[in-house]
Amino acid sequence: MEIRFWGTRGSVPTPGPQTVRFGGNTSCVEVRTESDHVFVFDCGTGARLLGDALVAHGPVSASMLISHTHWDHIQGFPFFAPAFTPNNTIAVYGPEGGRRSLHDTLAQQMEHSYFPVDLSQLPATLTYHDLGEGAHKLGGARVIAQYLNHPAVTLGYRLDTEHADAALCEWVIGEMDRTPPAVAAALHDCFESIDTRPLLSGIEIPVLLLSGDRSRIASEQQRAFVDRLPHGRLELFAGCGHGVNLLQPERCARASLDFWRTIDLPAEAGSAGDADAGTSKRGTGPGPD
Image (cartoon, rainbow, N blue to C red; front, side, top):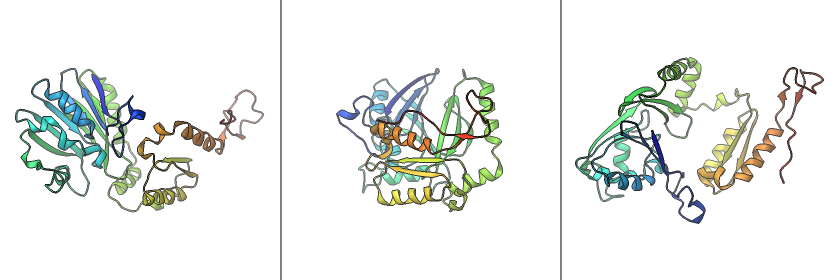
């Protein structure tokens, strides 16, 4: 299996000398299986370069899996060259349960007000599929889809080829099926935009939210989210977008360390130097410079 990252950024493309190493395009990952089938995970602006590379080697048969339909994950679709060639076949998949189907979402961003070519005019053989959670047979491989917590209906994907451990695949599916009904119901409520804020007060584990959102509204929403958590903290890195941990790694590390020091953890039973295994202790690592 071969994997290549064609886009690694979030929110908007970020060209410039600071992003040369990993590139400035938004999310797009190519996975080529042992049978030479191409999977495309997300279709940000990195898909333009991927598409050019694919058409240079003849007819294309590909499966495209969209995690969610925020712009940085679909904005490269109108520039994906294989979609403009008649003898290519592309199956496009995305999460079901949104306000509109995957097809309609992609069609709207290609309306003539925004783009000169309508989705229906693309000459390649294109099919659109709304996926639910679970295991699916796609492109000669098994794809396990799992809903994620994100401000849109979102799927995370696991790709298992014929050479993967079948027992491991069955274990993953079994664990997904064992999700407690109350937890599954709460997750479903989140994805259906039902107000689940009252549930936040029951989360007892400490939560640190590192955010780089530029939007004042998004920042206010995150503060309201953290305020409802019994042990929550928000560290706002204004202007960093999704790449906060890449653009401000030292500041993120310092914030995490400071947060860690505020947490009381139970001492390990029988650990050396503990006079009382029932007491609590804090992290005592060196402080930041």
